[in-house]
Length: 259
Ligand SMILES: NC(=O)c1ccc[n+]([C@@H]2O[C@H](COP(=O)([O-])OP(=O)(O)OC[C@H]3O[C@@H](n4cnc5c(N)ncnc54)[C@H](OP(=O)(O)O)[C@@H]3O)[C@@H](O)[C@H]2O)c1
Image (cartoon, rainbow, N blue to C red; front, side):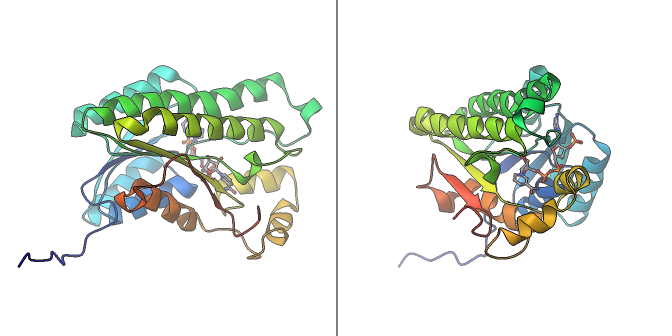
């Protein structure tokens, strides 16, 4: 009779996972969660001080973590970070492309050229570049899984954050295209669209637009903001082998706000 292995295993055991935007918010929650679920994590953002504290914390808990500085607006720095993972681990199994910047809130005709260019570079082109580099490394070992953090703000008109909404919708498009293009190579690609989540990004929006937090809570059927970990949980599952039949999906994590 074949013995059944009943050893408990983490959702991401044995996987090398890259996380951008890992210094705080959803990315930092993902770093802790993915490491607890058995992944070796490589954490990226522009500043490395917060990353290094996280790396220390994860290692103290017995996890495997490293950090690398990345500016998503700089294609070469994105490619260099993925190369660094290749040197460090020789493989890449998962990538959570999550880093992003919020624009100065305001209507379409008041959005500055600088804001549009920055939203394009950080929130769209950076992920395009990251995905293609990540897929290159994943292919060397038979594939992997990618999750891109989009936003509920990508789904419909976004009069408060028009450039942010547009770039997030463009991210949904390349997420679906990459899923179709790379499926035969064993690479799954999905997106998540969080609703209001309690992070510094929302604090910045509240500072520019007082009352937005209450508005967001009131428009969610669950009546509250998400905790960063609740969003990271969905990314963890999508990156895991348990989601083996899921690709090209844009999954809402919004407490029903988009329903
Ligand atoms: N919070 C929400 O309500 C909400 C809702 C929908 C979608 N989202 C999305 O969720 C993701 C995470 O957001 P969050 O709420 O956790 O935001 P956050 O707390 O502001 O964190 C943003 C992260 O992105 C990094 N980052 C910003 N600009 C970068 C750049 N040019 N290059 C590299 N890293 C950069 C930041 O680190 P450095 O500043 O050190 O670089 C930080 O780690 C984003 O994609 C956001 O659009 C958030």
